[in-house]
Amino acid sequence: MSTHLFVSPALGQYGFPGGHPLSVDRQGAFWQAARSRGLDRNVVLAPSAPAPRAAIERFHTPEYVERVREASRVGAGYLDYGDTPAFPGCYEVAAHVVGAALEGARRVVAGEALRCFQPIGGLHHARRGSAAGFCVFNDIGVLIETLRAEHGVRRIAYVDIDVHHGDGVYYEFEHDPHLIVVDIHEDGRFLYPGTGASHETGAGAAQGTKLNLPLAPGADDAQFFRAWEHAERFLARFEPQFFILQCGADSLADDPLAHLRFTPAAHRHAVRRLRLLAEQHAQGRLMAFGGGGYNLDGLAMAWCAVLEVLQQ
Ligand SMILES: [Zn+2]
Image 1 (cartoon, rainbow, N blue to C red):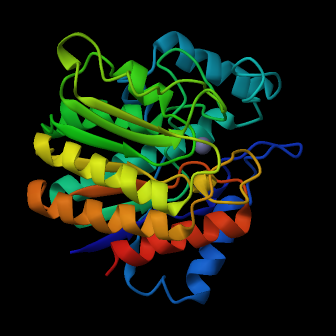
Image 2: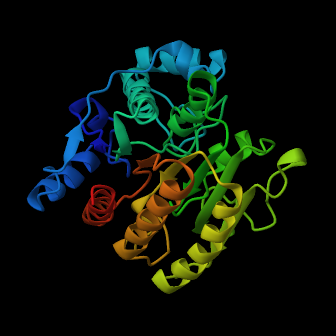
């Protein structure tokens, strides 16, 4: 069994016009770098299709899904308060990101793939009823609901090393004791979305199932490795049946939107260690998503490191 990679012209279209930091150039920058390093030889390039509306509505409200459809037809305006513009066809493109995640889950659960990587994905800010922070549909949220509804997978680990707190996943599953969350990010006092303080550990019956590890601006690999030790001990306690990683590259030094100073060694370490945890507890089942990253050279380096470790 091998690593399956979701890279396609349709996925590459997830990006916003008019000089927006989340451009349509990101997948291409990664894929060009990956091919130049020979990282395309050991992977299965998996085809994907847009998720059906009913699947998207396992997580999102029908009202919100309808709003996106309408905005997609009109092709103008904003889906939130100003970060996430609508563009013609944005519904179809966002539905395709979700569809690839669901196809990855199907392959992993069926045993056709051991692991997957989807660079254009991990849209962790969208809420059930709204867009946020460049994220139209929350592919991770739909994936979690689908793993449960369709595949009988209940205890899932979601690990997020994007520089931003994954608030859309955290808050929509805050009361869910079977979603184990570990989120390492820049301290919300200094960066969007402002959440993810260390005292946020889940609510109600889920208290103690979430671990937020905010880092001060300027934190580098040494601080990441220390936080990771903590994260790993936490994850192992719950013996998750399935692992999801959002490995945003905006935590690298030189990202224009944030202030951490990781190198791709952080991403490499996270994937290597999560692979081992998945092998110990989850029959190796691991899906990785590219998340943010707004410096094209940086995201290409980080995601190549991820792919390299996944296919070893
Ligand atoms: Zn981010």
